[in-house]
Length: 285
Image 1: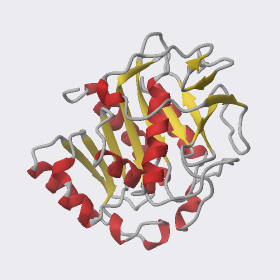
Image 2 (image 1 turned 180 degrees about the vertical axis):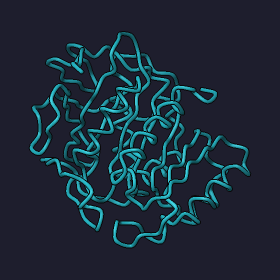
Image 3 (image 1 turned 30 degrees about the horizontal axis):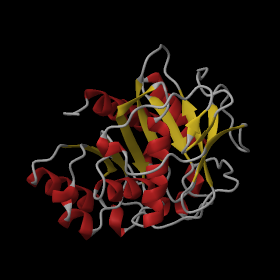
């Protein structure tokens, strides 16, 4: 999938060079300045050809690399920002982006922190993130500022519909996405895959206005990176709390463990198809 409109691009808060047209933002899209974005070569560990790679400056220092996949056709497409879990950035997240493109959605797999840890590392093939910012808590200001910078950069892509940007977060990435929408409603939808659901998320469900799709495994497997915050009981409690507030939430529970999306090809495909359709429907946006 040959990308267009990114050749030679260097973007900053004061201007845009070749390929990225400035998109006039509506008021809800002006919470963060345009980060510096530069094109980069294929990073170490990445194997997929025909994908564009960029670096996005992180507000708290360092750079976040990202793979961008493009659907066939022309015009503006919905886009999905993909955030990896504690096990780190890897080829599997690029594969997710490629599958989103097959579903008609621009896929952007971003390395929002460098390094990896935990039992889940065996489920990903690492991609190096040189100069990447450090791992932070999903609820931290740094995490939210990084997501904000990525969303702003994506919104400026000339082939992206700025009003149909979603976030797909796995595990810690899902926690970061959830914490984002507890504070800011700047995306069209959020997909939470194997996310953690602390008590605060349940008690603050009334603050959520962004449509949510929950993807979660029903098995508790201590060997694959899950924690007490990622149990299916907590996921269902959060789902019920959002429903009580009459906000849009859908859920799919798989007979799988925490990293089931990377263990089962059928779950991988089903998850992306559900997420893409959820975003395409707009759900009132």
